[in-house]
Image 1 (cartoon, rainbow, N blue to C red):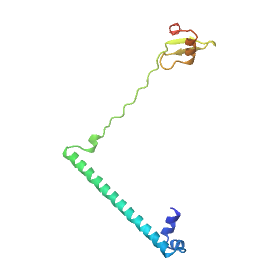
Image 2 (image 1 turned 60 degrees about the horizontal axis):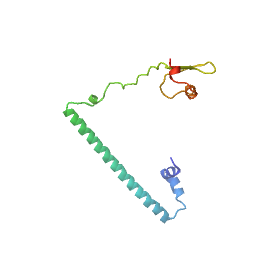
Image 3 (image 1 turned 45 degrees about the vertical axis):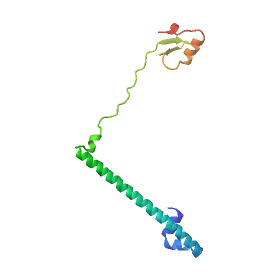
Image 4 (image 1 turned 90 degrees about the vertical axis):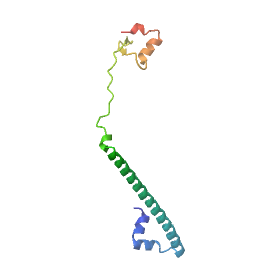
Length: 131
């Protein structure tokens, strides 16, 4: 809780906190508090009315479902959501050896690897490295 609520909930602490206030200041505080109480009561009444309206609408829907011979379970599916199957890796279509003698393979799909890009830029062709 905050300091204010601690003081407001304890009569002696509240009296001590108001000790140095004038009657006019305390009346102003009381007026503000009365406004807050009234507003909060209105909000709670509106919330209760909305909850009652929702409950009535739920009951109306359940009654309509019962009249139609349906139950809430009829709207729930027992099917598990479909999952995507993992794709099989694609066989490489291109193979080259770099200057270090390392072999690099590429399926031909997606972004061109830098090794192949360098090979193509220096005059190599795709057909020359096709597997």
